[in-house]
View (spheres, rainbow, N blue to C red):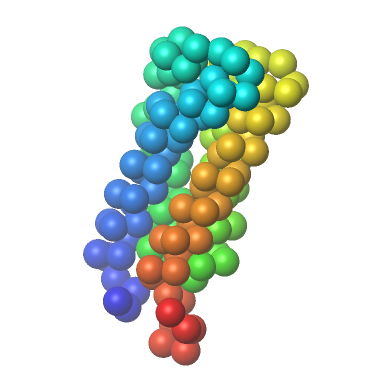
Length: 130
């Protein structure tokens, strides 16, 4: 798939859904398990941050769709995920330092792995191995 508008649309969609799932499911689940908290309470605390974080990761997914590359994808969505995790831990939940660090690490790992997969699907050039 060569650089095109369709790649950007697919990247935007995948990134947006990744951001939505990070905010509403993954982060509350991980924080609930690590800190012995109720995941439903955490999910309700971060519900208003779902759409803005989905948009931010969608922009990262669109960049991956345009430029491609596995390492680029891991760096972009990993960075977006880390920022989103920090916002969820510090602002949405208002937690202390350990909670913020676990939330940031969750976003970094989730976004990095997702970006690696999406970036691998959208290879950078003809010479880059699949």
